[in-house]
Image 1 (spheres, rainbow, N blue to C red):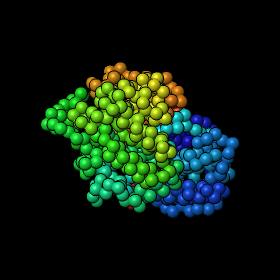
Image 2: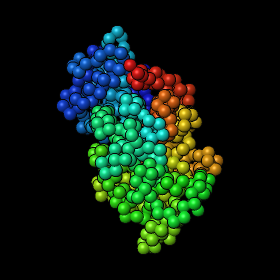
Image 3: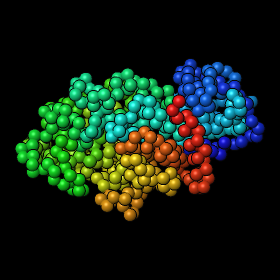
Image 4: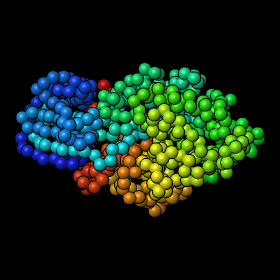
Length: 480
Ligand SMILES: [Zn+2]
C-alpha cells in the first residue's frame, strides 16, 4: 500500500514488517480532538466497523519543527502522525486512510517513515450547486473526496440564472423555494469543512448569470432599458443569444447598495472564509449600452465603453469585499482594458483563455489560479477529460477546444512562480450520481499535479495507484 498513496508523498521509506494496531485514534493536543473525531468517523465508514477514540492505535501529535502544511507518518512499534498545524495533520490522516489495511477488526500498517508536503497550496474543487440540486448529504460526500485527496479548498457556486441556493434576509424572494440551503445546512457544511481542514470559498456570481436576481428584484438589480427589443435576443460577440435579464445594472446606486448587502450577508454566512468569489464570468455587457443608468454612470466617471465598465464593476465589488476583510476571487471574464482599476489583491481564475489570458494577468500583477477548461472541467453529465489528460497537463499550461479561446490548438504556458497559486477542478451542470466517479478520479490527478510539480510516476503506475485509491474512497462515500 505504501506505493499507492495519491498524491505521491515526497519521501517514503519502508522499514520492513507490519504493525498490528487497535482501531483507535488518540491525540495529545486538545485542539485536535475535532480531527480525532473525523478520523474515527472516516475509518468507521470505510472499514464497516466502529473505530474508537483512545490509546493503543494511531497517535496524532504536534511537531512545531515541521514546515507549515507538512506532516510525517512514523510506523514502527506504534503509529504516529506529526504535523505543525491543522492542514498538516489532516493531510496525515488522509495518508493513513489510504495506507491502512484491516486484519479482522485490527489495523495493519506497513512499517515505514513518510515525510510529505505539497508544492502548490491551492488545490480546489468547484461545485456547481445551482444547475442541479445537491442535497446536503451529497455536498458532504464531495467534501469527503476533497479530504481524502488532500484538496483543501472547496469553492461553492451558489447563485446563477436558474436558482439561488442561499437565503438572504434582505432579499427573501431570492432563495429558490424548497431548494436552498437553510442556515442550519450552511452551519453543517462549515463544521464538516472545519473538521477536515477544508476551507470554503462561497461564490456569489455577478454581474452576469444574474437572472435569478433580476427576475426576483427587477427594480433593484435590473437595467433600465429604453428599447428592450433592440438588444433582447441579439447575438453576443461569441455567438450566444443575449437575454437582457441575465446581467445586473452596473450604473445604479440601488443595485450596488443591494450587492453590498448581499456580499455582507455572504460574509456573515461564511465567517471563517478568507476568500469570497465574486463571479465575473460571461456577462452580456452589450445590455449596458442600452441602459441610460449605465450610460450616465460611464459619462460621470470618465468610462469610455462597456468593457471598461465591466472592469470598473469588478473593481468596485472587489474593493467592498476587501473592506469586509476578505480576499476577492474572480473568474477571468473581465477584459484587460480598464483592469488596472481592479485591486491587485484580487485573485483571478484563468479558465477560458478568452477574456483575459494567464500571461497578461501575471504581467498586470494579479495572482492567478489555473482553472483551464481543458482538462480541468467536468461538464454536463459527460466526462470529457480523463485522469490521464490531467496527468499529461501541468499547472503552467492552459488548453482549450473552443475556437474563441487563445489556447485552442496551441496551449498557453507561463513560468512557475508564487503568483501561480494553484489549480482547480470545476464541475458544472451534473447531478451527484453522474459526477462522482469523474470527480474521484480527476480531482486526485489534479491534486497530484499540484502536490508534485515534478512528475513522479508513469501512466501505467499511476493508473494502478488510482484504481487502488478509488476503491478505498468509494467505500468511504457510499450510501449506507
Ligand atoms: Zn444599467
